[in-house]
Image (cartoon, rainbow, N blue to C red):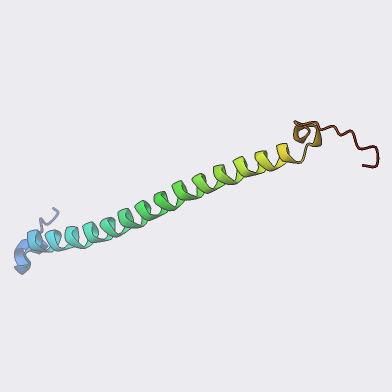
Length: 82
């Protein structure tokens, strides 16, 4: 028949402390990843704002390049030499 073993109990290894330490290491790693994610999210938000600003500037420049839009004012003079 099979043998029942309890390696952690029989060797005197404190498995609870070992698991606790492993959880601490993993939680530190998770915290590091969360900080990096937050940084990437902030950068992504700022790049989106920049993209929108550049798009608005491009639209404005496009409107200014249309000469029909610039001919808002008309002038006249009585001087025939001009």
